[in-house]
Structure formats: C-alpha cells, structure tokens
Length: 317
Image (cartoon, rainbow, N blue to C red; front, side, top):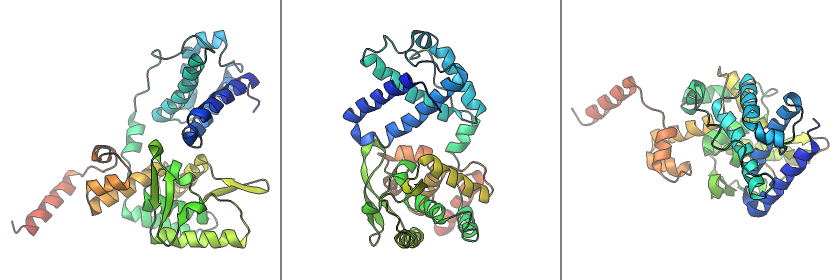
C-alpha cells in the first residue's frame, strides 16, 4: 500500500532516534510499535484521505480521527487490549515529536481514555488448557502432518515446556541452542532480562528433527522459526506464529487460542505440580503476586472441596 511518503519519513526518523537510545529493544518493542503504526497509516490511507500525521488539521482533529479508528479496529475484531496497544504506539510517536519540536503539544494525551477490558478480554486473560487438550492437539497434529508441519508442532511443545513469551520464542536462534543441556542461552525477555529458555523431551525430539531437515535442505538461517521469502529464509513474524497457534486451537475446538494462553497454561500446571515460588521464577516474574493474580487458575468450589477432603484424609481426619 502506498502510504503517505512524508508520514513514513517522519516515522523512520522516530525509529532511528529510538534505535540510538534503545537499541536493545529495536527488535522487540519498537518492531511491534512499527507494525501497529503501519496499521494506523493504512487506516489513514483508506478512510481519512491519507492525512499527514503532523499536519495542523490532523493534530487539531486527532481525537475524532482516533475515535473513528477505534471503531474501525473493533469492526475488524480487535479487542480493547489490542486497541490500547495500538494507541500506545501512536502516542509514543507523538511524545517523541513534541520532544523534537515537530509539534507543539501531544494531540490526544489526557483527552482519550484507555479502553477498559471487556468480557472478551477477561476471558482471554483467564483462559487455560488442560492436559487432555494438550495431548489431543499433539496427537491430531501428528496425524495431520501436511497441515501442521514440524514448525507448528515445535511451537506447540516449546511454548508449553518453556512458558516463554512470544517475543522471546520468535527471536530464538540456533546459535543460542545447547540441545544437550536442554535450553537456549542468553535470550532477551521482557524488561531486557537475559534468561535461559528451557525445554524438555518433546521439544528436543522435534528440534533434532527440524535441524536435520534444515541441514538436508541447505536452509541457512540462524533463526529457529523461519518462513521463505522469495529465494531466502527470514525470521518468522509474531503474527505468523499467532496464526499457527490459532490454527492448532481450532483443531481441538477453540476458536481463539493465543500463544499467551499456552504460557499461562504452562505456568499454572507447574504451580500445581510444585509451588507458586517456583512457578514465578519459571515465568521470570519479579514477584509471586503477578503470577498468582494473572497466571494461576482459580479453583472452583468443587475443586476446593476435593482438595480439603484429600488433606483431611492424609491427616487421618
């Protein structure tokens, strides 16, 4: 799509500026910001006469434009959290513009409230798979290998065994892999933490198969997950990973399955097997409150009753 050239030029200036100041986040935070801004520029092109981001008219009417953009996002199926993320990317750009004296004031700061999470967003946050779901997906993918290739199966196992975020998974490189020790070393996680991403037997089996396939077909790329672009292989984008996980979800009867669902499922299962402290460490959380509040499935009344009965029996009561 032919975006307004001036819009692209000023946005590239913004990215270059942030690259100088925050180089370590260029392939994570600002890469995502760019994809969200491209979505907004696409909207401006299609529905707002390809307005200039920094024109006086756009700045003056920015709130109204963004309200129409929000409605457009909703029509395309975006939930409130996704829309808030897009607004954050746009706001970050305008904050930079004010600092660089390109505009006099932020056009929608304190004028456009963040959207509250609705029912759909809450369902997404509290969503968990059970052991039966995990095994069922594994078996069905193995019996339908033409539709679910080795990369899809590897993504499934790695998300569930590592509990890593999609940003870390998408950026994994073969040069970071210690397959005998069972982890990827020096992986950049949220907050620029450098961590090891562990994996277990199911992932190891598929990793060896994937590496053998790549060697046999002379596939040269350091990225673990890849897609073919013309004559070369490039890093698989997060949007592609999300689409693959969604496709696996549909296989087992879930219309909306996200990589974050797999992360939460893995952390919750580990907490059930060990304790909240180890689960928080495994999730790379700074404290257990985040883990408990957002990553542990609340027990039902029936589950609590069963747990109490088990404890009483063990104590001879």
